[in-house]
Length: 113
Image (cartoon, rainbow, N blue to C red; front, side, top):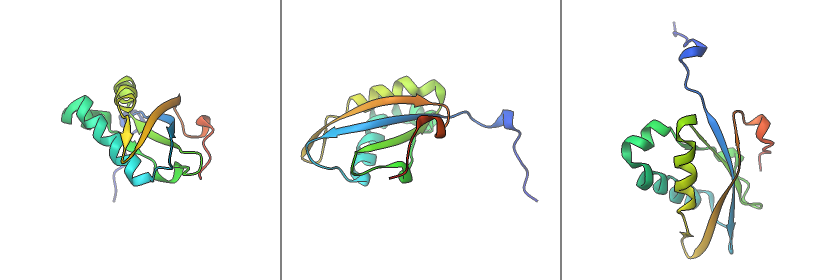
């Protein structure tokens, strides 16, 4: 029998919706690696684990270069700063623009790509 967690014991989440501006299209795996590596460098190992940062793969839109990242509410500012520090992925120069921070995926008006 599996024990259920009470809703009050679950961690809250925030969803950061972002757009990636670049000259060339960027693959999901390259974008994910650069973003998570930047978060690790900015926040450190403890901050990275506390932030519980995760890229949501099925919300990545390769054509429009839009995506979604989930984290804890206390670490939203650290995640935004870490994404702002990414300037290059591979050979292309990039800019991460966080367009919205939402409490739910549905209210973020994200459509799977």
